[in-house]
Image 1: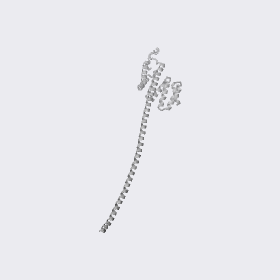
Image 2: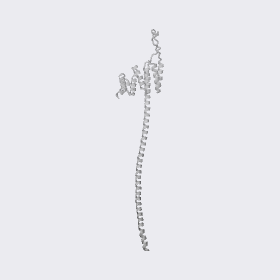
Image 3: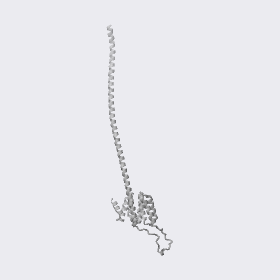
Image 4: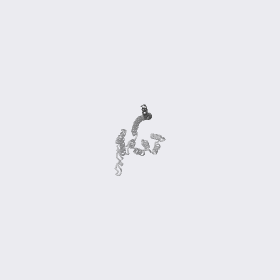
Length: 267
């Protein structure tokens, strides 16, 4: 009986050993994969950490760039505001200076007119031998110095009030209506100044040139030529401006306008 048990035990041993061997192999194989899985998790964590660090660094750079850009925009706004303020101030000062100059010339105009000869009235009696009317002789319209003065003063008041379009129209109307008036040269002078203030340099040049050519001995003739040169410079006609300034110095060497012309010629 004992021998039969031993034989059965011996018969079961190979199967048991085989089963044990398989269990050991499975355990070894699973251990290897478990180790590999653990290694893969560590590597993934490391990569995620590096990616997070790089992302944070990039976000920091972007944030700093945005802050710097915002500061630059704010600085540009402040600079733009400052420059706008300066432009407004300079515009005001320029307008004030132009107004002072305008008032000065208007006052000077009044003083010069007191020194100018007054037009004679056409109501003076003619000699007896000239009393007969001549059929072919043109009748000259009688001038009224008082009425001319009122018209001229009205135009000058428009210019003084800075109503430039109305003033230009009034001076032009006066000059055409009274071409032989003692006030006609001054009317053309102020017509040119009004046109210049309206930024119409071509018309301003025409008016000032007419004054300088038709009434070269008039006190405003030198200033008229200076105004012509100023308009030519603004029209980028440097050669024409130089010629006009040289003509001014040659014809009116002792005038205030000539002194200004010499200074411009030196530049």
